[in-house]
Length: 181
Image (cartoon, rainbow, N blue to C red; front, side, top):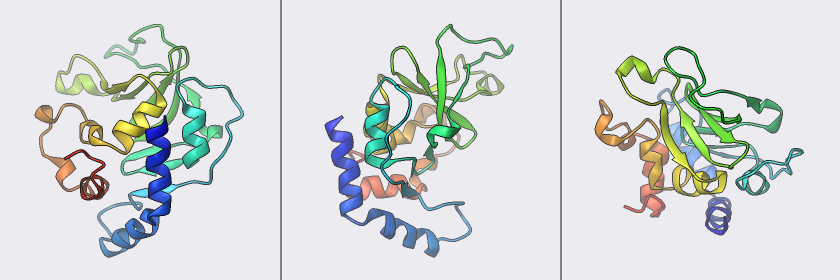
């Protein structure tokens, strides 16, 4: 949790939002939004596990590259389903964000966070769970602002292209050392 808070404070202190917005303007037309947006810190009204409240107290609803954390008013219960439309398990999950058309889901009992791709079966994959972390704080720290970002769309070896090499947020993570490379 401390690492997550420190990274967000560093992004705010370093002027990363402004710098990345400027890069986005220079690269207009290729991306729909700047790669980083930190909202105003907000206290969540609900009680959620996994450090989600700490994330929102540090960053509010935010965007980290392709990861969009939603405002609390947009949180909604959501099942991770299989190819037949049946829930993959009996976990209670809440959609707290998006990665493009994929969902960022919080397990309401354990606090674990997954990125879930609903159409995984179209490629013959066994599971739609692309990324899983033990908590929202760990997800923010190691995926949204860390080396795990490159795995957002599943294991690198299963990707058609090395999309992360062209991603402006991952480029920033590499430049600043947050990607651990």
